Amino acid sequence: MIKSGTDINFAAQLLKKNKVVGIPTETVYGLAANAYAEEAILSVFKIKNRPFFDPLIVHVSCINQVNEIAHWHDERLKRLAEHFWPGPLSLLLPKKTIIPDIVTSGLSQVAVRMPQHPLCLELLNRIAFPLAAPSANPFGYISPTEAQHVLDQLKSQIDYVLDGGPCTIGLESSIVGIENNQLTLFRAGGISCEAIEQVAGTLHLNTSKSDNPKTPGQLKSHYAPKIPMYAGPLTKLLKKWGTKKVALLYTGTENYNVYFKFNLSPTHNNDEIARNMFRAFRAADQSGADVILISFVENTGLGMAINDRIARAVIRD
Ligand code: TXA
Ligand code: MG
Image (cartoon, rainbow, N blue to C red; front, side, top):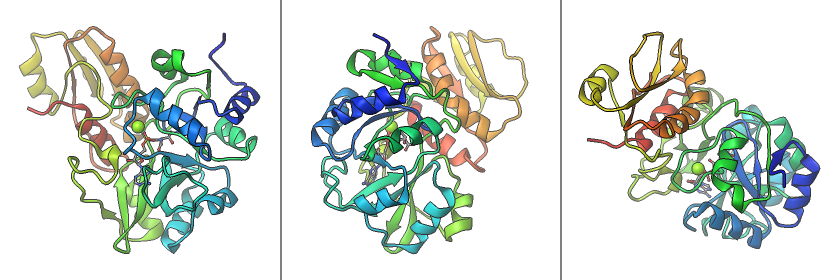
């Protein structure tokens, strides 16, 4: 049986039968199910091997659908939605009872976003319910940015992946909510803090620690390759690990002599680095190398989200 393709009707039929389907978004691929059907959501947790304390993001096709599932309690969030949707931004809104508690892990707020991907929006338009979808990777592993990545790991457990090509952003949505009446960033992602602040004013950085996460996507070990990965200045790391088989993820145009290398961006461009990063993690993980070496990037634009993902993927000395 063909497991991936662009058959939106087939994907819609499966979802209507409470099956789980891989879907493309501009950030990463999702593992989608009817957000109103507890049974379907249970399958998502099971397939991902995801703990029930880690809530799911709900994907909508229009503002009417948001009103069906949540309350707009804050003007700043409304402004952000108007400005950035469809796009890589999830908003935490007080949920209505139509959303089962399992979706939000019992929390009173639901994370909502309108994805910016033509195939995904088309699919959402053909069904009468929103889609709860975590990233389509086994819990703790690298997020998928191509349909093939989803098939590589979950083929035996799902019926179909809607193939929308490689993700254009490459890392997950930013998650923003209100805490103590302050606009608060819960996860750095595809929209930069600078851009969010320009639209909605001062953005407070969530201080919850990774060992006691309020937002479980903030768990310390996440997005992690199976072979050890270290981050820091590359010359220093290469000196230390030079005798091993090194997989090097680098930027710029220097010509390194290593076992495996992946150029994330010849021009050190953070948008390009974001787009390539998870793909590079995967390629390095499968390269046969002993260690993966990478350096942190400039903290501008998507740099904060890139550095966050690197920090969660590496082993620290
Ligand atoms: O870009 C994305 O957001 C992708 C695509 C598929 O849309 N999805 C994604 O989902 O990254 P996931 O499940 O890998 O990460 C969602 C994170 C959770 O780990 C959780 O920390 C946070 O979103 N989250 C979801 N609902 C929440 C809630 N009600 N309160 C606090 N955090 C929530
Ligand atoms: Mg994830």
